[in-house]
Image (tube, rainbow, N blue to C red; front, side, top):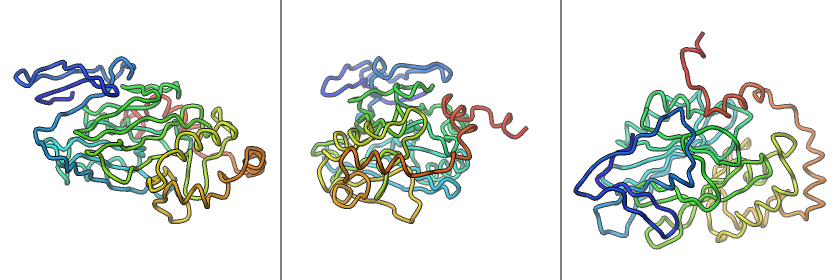
Length: 298
């Protein structure tokens, strides 16, 4: 359950005030229901400060078995310090929640860039431990979550927001979350690209509705159109890299600098092994990850 002195539903530049500041209240969502993000729009906490110096807290966290990066973001200039997690992993959910508590943050969202095949998302466990947290995934993924996002949606946490950009190709439902553009938003911008764009690489395209031509188009139209200094934060890295930029990847990415035929040839000849977790991870992630920790233990 999300509580705020002023809770507003917002989409793009239009906003509809649901509750006045003189009437604090909350909106309750049945955790088992699948709610359209387009109808719910975005939950926005309004800051009481007039300062334009919004402060984004960013922590990059690592899960070694699947080489997955989880990202913790928070608006620490806001009184409630609302926060979100991008691509949490079940094995490290307790670590992530401990950090949230240590930093005095209010976790409101647990989000996935796509339906992962190499690990079980931590969103289900997080929701059992922090019942007020809402899960988010793209509508195109056909997976279950509290909020289903679509291209152009804005996800607010405090006075900061993430823009949803469609980047299918690795899977049919991949999205990239990009920090907002504007004087009150962090600069340079940041793109949390999931498996669509990796540092000097990209996600495979041979399962889960993947398409090499679609991935190439997605990256070039939705990520490479961002400013060159935009920071790239992927969902994985297997060589110890942590961050790149749009400009670097446009120049040095050995796959995505190729034309469509060259890219297709590379992707068709990767000869990658069948993901060892896919038969466990994908069914679990289609329903927001593990919901019952007791069932897992048994």
